[in-house]
Length: 174
Image 1: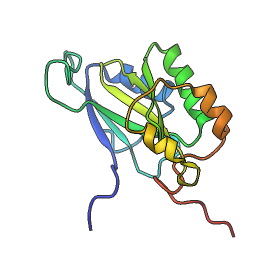
Image 2: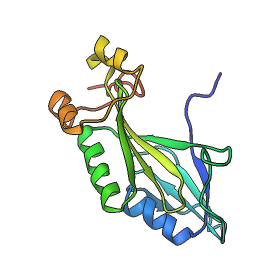
Image 3: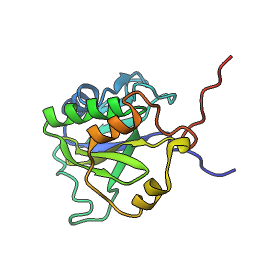
């Protein structure tokens, strides 16, 4: 049996309090008790089934990440949201926190990009459900276009559950 999903990521941060505040206040994670490890915090995404999704470990005096700009390293983590309304809400939160660095339409996915207080980059993505994908969406996925989020909300509806048939299976009804 092979790997089927990322369970959690661990980040080294220069200021634990500032980082926890960013991930909880801006991205909606909540802090969970994982045994009180000094200099660390564990965070869980709002709708996650993992015991935690993100560990943050304080490395006082550490410089911002240079990954991709001057050193090798992880470029970004990507988290999926369930609806375009949620993607829009996250876009506003990131903009308010001066953490939104861009957005892209990848054809099959609609993405926001941000940077945390340590310079670590991340992506927030909504995936077009498999049954709504068109050949045009698949073809557009071979490139990157500017994201027109309102156009996508008008096309799919703000509450359409993304990723159905791709990243998760449809809910069963009784």
